[in-house]
Length: 297
Image (tube, rainbow, N blue to C red):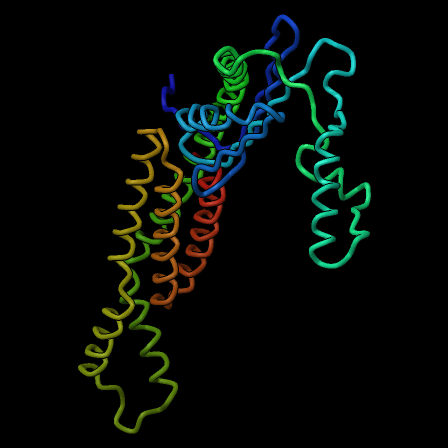
């Protein structure tokens, strides 16, 4: 049984927590992000909950953008609808009047939409409980929503693990194809170079000794065995991280970059058509790996 645990950064969770005279409604959404980015939206009057909620979510995730939206729904009819705070409106009107006098415009009066957009003009009801009573209740609601959220991330991660392992096996097959071709490359270079020289109809014929020297220089310049060895090393590290699990997305992404760099170097050095075709498939597989890795925590 596969016990490896890796998580996707994508997830959703929703929960309702009933109280005596209302309920908390919590929705949590997670998407890809390079770092940990937690955003909390709360009803007016519950802003004091933002920091403990943010810290609690941060303890449960390693990476990703997480949006936590918390609503307070009361039992009384219309209690959750926005209400006009007339005292706030009167205060803003007085400020506009004072500002108008300062700038020499006695009729400085905002329009209705401007007033509605000002902080505190529209309010919604908040629980009639103390902050000490509300915080544990809000955290209970948060934990209820975190359960399906984290389960979804884990399930997505399990699916990604299977895809990554399959793609890694495909990548290894491509590398093995390149490696099997390496012993034949010097002879292929020799035939290609000699064929070109014969086409030129040299007056003194082909100097076999000089040809061997040029072949040795060319073979050294086109040798990609070191790059192949480094690709094998990166693949082993990649597989080791998958087997270890945990928060590995950024490290896997780095390895994908290194694999792509080695593949590009091999492509620039080799002149063999068969190897070049295999490298195209190799780079395509690396790109698929990287696309999936960027979904991992």
